[in-house]
Length: 174
Image (cartoon, rainbow, N blue to C red; front, side, top):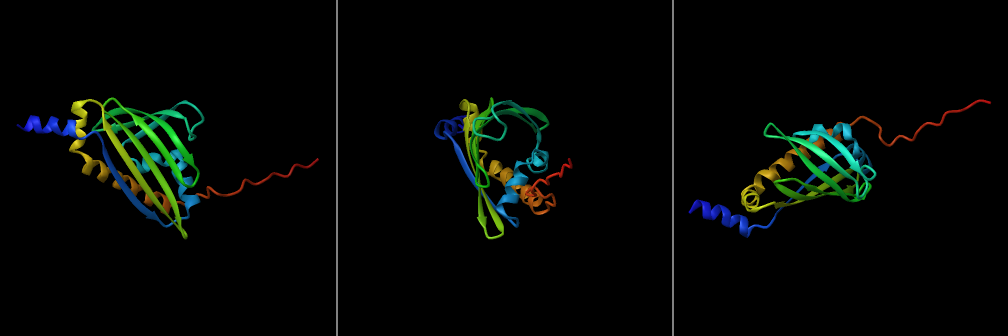
């Protein structure tokens, strides 16, 4: 009976959607700049190891990369495709893995001198076993995203690097 319920959930549940939101006490341009700093990614995404660029211009629409993460001690690779980018506002990506696919969107919204960051994830299981498993996992997946966003908030709010500084021009004497 339990097996029928388990696989029945996989047939019934075609995808799982969850959303998260945080507010950071930094302006949107600084929050965006910190988000774009690849050297900071491992500090806020649990298990992140590295990104290998495959094609397109990095961090622009159409760019494709392999993203490596540790999941329960095993290295997993996800194929990331950037679907949309609006600087200081939006980054949307799709991730393809053997087990599941995910559409992920992060929106930034200015709120005075702070920034509201909202994320939306839509997960699709690849196969009946994966669909059945993700049907029972939305709370844990959302909890992980909330933890990542808490880490991101700490990194953004403790940032001291001036990402927005204009480059200094050198004077050349003749």
